[in-house]
Image 1 (tube, rainbow, N blue to C red):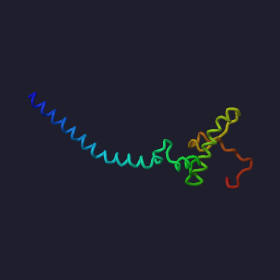
Image 2 (spheres, rainbow, N blue to C red; image 1 turned 180 degrees about the vertical axis):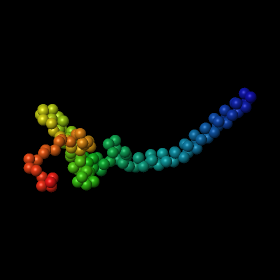
Image 3 (cartoon, rainbow, N blue to C red; image 1 turned 45 degrees about the vertical axis):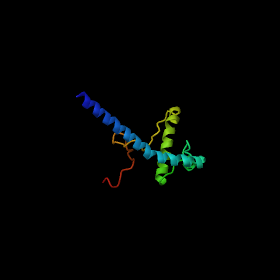
Image 4 (cartoon, helix red, strand yellow; image 1 turned 60 degrees about the vertical axis):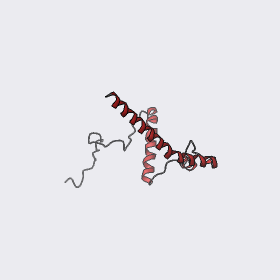
Length: 120
């Protein structure tokens, strides 16, 4: 049995060596061409910060789909600034759009002094 195990092990090692050789032959022509191109054009290497076009686009700031997206982003920026400002002022500042109001959250309606003509 030990001889069979040794033979199986030798076959496995041979197949892994063959696979490695095949992999090297497949990859090496690509690597060789890549080395030739890098030698011919050294300034075309990959830049660490990405392409110049991408960096230029990112410096301009975010792009918005429409005016609604722009206004929502602007409102979010204001909401981030409001809590710091409200700490100085003790008044309650109502910020809209953060949550869905419930009937308990809404302020009471003011009663009018004059009687409504529709009330009968």
